Image 1: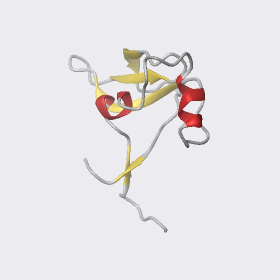
Image 2: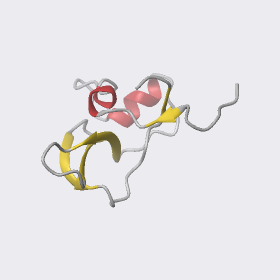
Image 3: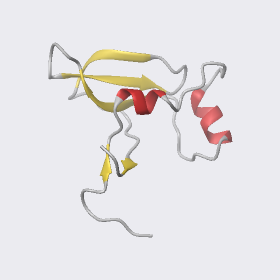
Length: 86
């Protein structure tokens, strides 16, 4: 099934956080065992901007599942595009 421009977006921090299982030692390893591929033990951007500074955003580390904010949007992190919704 193909896709067209505008069908993909970055998930917000709550959507991205919903992938994390706090009982797992490595989120990336666990997600791979759940059928996901190309998951890396690193930080993934969310679309959620930090409320007091729009140059900062929230991200999630897929090694330990930690959620962080205060990282400038100019940093290079992984992305986990999702299709549809808002």
